[in-house]
Image 1 (cartoon, helix red, strand yellow):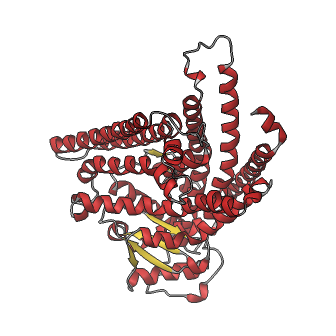
Image 2 (tube, helix red, strand yellow):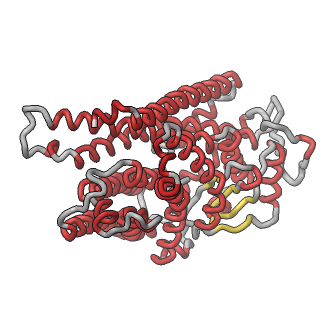
Length: 499
């Protein structure tokens, strides 16, 4: 659930070794001014976009779909610019060297990491401040009181995003500072890096529900017809959880999520706007979608994916560094070329490759997982009647049948698909999105609905599920090989010779 941009920022800060680390940097004042200039540049773009959208909405009297599309594109471009600027601050300006070497914070556990991350945190906070004006004019409900107050808005966004950074920062701190300080010989082992990342990553996954509860404003879903329905759904499909939580967003967000890999420490979160906007059956379908992520073990696999991607990143970094070094030594490259400095060019190329990797590989995997969860969400509101309709509501108060408990939901029926399709359409309407608008992680609403409608033949569903399983196995093998190859190269004599 951590925003992908934050994860990339953490990789830029801690997963890629800055040039000449450990050597004090000259002209500290100039480097600080450059850092402030980069932060100010991104903030100016954010305020410009936010105020432009607010003015257009005020002039037109409403937020048109065209304006929403332009705003969504602007936010994406702003995210990319923020990462590029932060990568330049770390690897071009040398912010890490200033913090750890010039200011002597290298031995300060956690403080040095927070200071290295500080420019990106400021960029995010100023971005939210600038985009607040657009978000207020585009809010999904007119009575969303907190959306009209800047302080409340910034607190909600900060708790949502920054609160989830804590476990990942702890992972880096424990791995790099604590283990290296108390067991320095352990880092020389070939198995040190993969074992450390695997163990610490598993701990973060298990403890993530606690961080979510601390970071996000939530409350338990009160007793009533909706809670009884959702509990029946969970009982019927064998889903265990700790609680169903209402995620208070001030009516600004229509979404749901699940956190926790352990059955006894797992929460399902439904936003306040989702509960107020959707019908009970549609909420149950969305609830089933979140159950589907757990039933198909998506959380575990995505954790493994990000751990394995560190190996891919390491191999990409080595390849880019070697390529830039070869080009810099070429006779046709002039002395004034940026290739001669190397560091900034490496950072830009690596950031571009990293973005392309996540956009293509992670995006495709995420869309497959979303469709798996869509099928599951449709199934939990489907029935066992082969001639449906007429449709039987298996979880309503008028038909409570605990004896129907099973390990899997019923087979798909046309009405179940229609209910989930209406839930997707409600999400699109509430957020002012066209059904054909594509998300790189979720696909388009129209595409997801068309996919479900094409699964009325059970053989098509089985073929789809087999395809996803094969994709997971193939990708898992590649990521495992990449991780262990990167570890072997980092410790082999060949790497020392190449350096």
